[in-house]
Image (cartoon, rainbow, N blue to C red; front, side, top):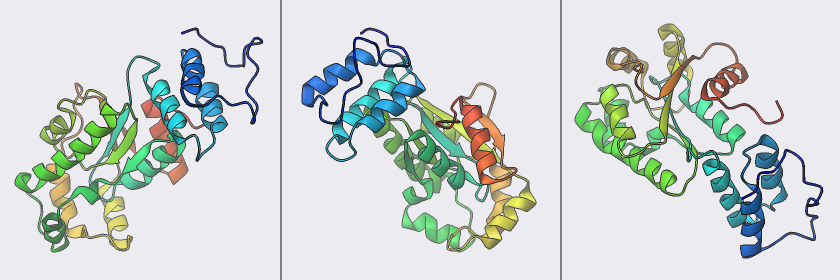
Length: 242
């Protein structure tokens, strides 16, 4: 494949709306150009592909972009205790980067939810099936060459080791906040089953990322936009058109 610059080559005029390649020709056209992983390529080509008719081509381009650097897809597990702001950060990353997002709490079996709602901390035995379910979702993303972001408390090193086992593209983003700030958030967020009374047990269980673990830590200080900027910078990404 030949490399391209951040502008259309003089020998290749940007395709017009009525002159788009289709099917295999689209793949050949895209594959011939995706040797340089640039923001212009990432935004321009994806926006060039119509949203409905060209869904498959858009996914193909995304896989090419994810694999263009030779490192494969990027799967970020946003971790931390309940109430630290994982969901807000993960949804922000999903929106800015165009990655699929999954909420880790949705993988809990009903028995786990009932236990936490009643104020009883989960045991390791409760957590293994939940972690394995999240790991299975990550494996599916990796097998498709798709980048993704998922929330998961991942409090202990052994939990994170399970999520990484056989999944080379997983890394962690640990969101931290002061305990009194987290407690206040837990007390005022509507509709969540996790009671503030479980915060001390989560803090006691938490094992920060080790120096040999793939991941970064950020503080949840400031506005949601500021925290998202901090997360993008820590992960080596940036907002489009920033």
